[in-house]
Image 1 (tube, rainbow, N blue to C red):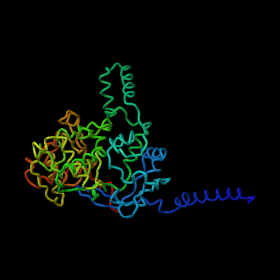
Image 2 (image 1 turned 90 degrees about the vertical axis):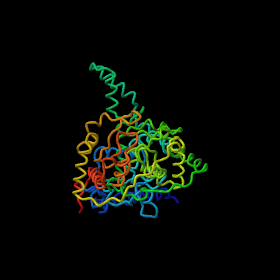
Image 3 (image 1 turned 90 degrees about the horizontal axis):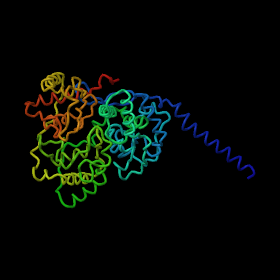
Image 4 (image 1 turned 120 degrees about the vertical axis):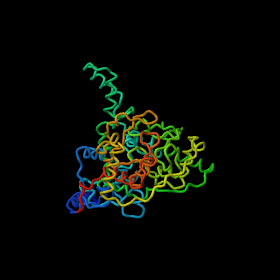
Length: 458
């Protein structure tokens, strides 16, 4: 026992050295850590989706900084970074992880505790607006969250405004002009905006899983094409109310007017004001309220590129009851029942001739005036567009491949036929007389987001 302390000290150093070898040196020496090949889902030049062999992209400067902040703030202590090949994992998070996805993650940040959700496939699941609110105070959007506030990742908007005013006054420019220019520069309406670290961290989280390409566009567990609502009852509405308070109130507000505490962080799109009875995504004609199945689809799939996440992991009964409660915010559902839905047939196989026809229709219908020649949402009318509530609204940038109503040809077809209530996007049903015209324009719009030239099949 005389040398027990010495033995314990030597053993301690030995175990530490063994851990460094096993967890650091050996993984770095394994050839698997240098594999960069992954399977990617891409959009072809014809607007279809297919899987190809591709390579993982290295982080640029912004993403590398974001990863450093992710590690610095200890995010990986609670959030795992690996979708395991066991039952149910891919249903919740997405495709099982591939070796090549971690080629540039040195050191690895797999995480093991799973206190928070897995983040491997988090890129594109939520919009930047949602992440701003979530990092500032997670409980605004996830009431049950135990995640701490990360307020030091934000800077005060008012202070930035005062700095801008002082700079402009020194140049002899009026305050009004400066304030407007600053808001346009910052592109945000909230009291707080992310600082450089906050922007980098959001960019990093939004990049997670993106080395697998557009996999989310084919993720079957969150795709709903139709459904039959259960019978409405007092019990279903009450259950929906409880679900709403837990899941939706932070954004849409207690009164359903879109003025929840998180709404002040939203830039791209404000939360839907349910009291107006105006809904964009429907199968019903322009001006009509949606069917229950339309609301159910939006709750399930979310609205891509915005703060509205997909809720496909909620029990089906809870989602239907949410629909029943949401409808109570507007009398339009009782006074003006939904009109019969527009039938969306099965999408045909596209070809070059169909896309050429779609291009002619894009020009003929003057889509370029809003969405631009290259589909980037930069048309001549884009700076002046507002919605029915007087808020500025930006045309969709088709090249990003983020379509709010859904990424399938049927989704684009439905949007052309119904229009988007409350926005400048009208219904083209009366002018797109033939099925061929409707599909031609739908596939042409999807083709703007083609990345086939970037990822050649190997």
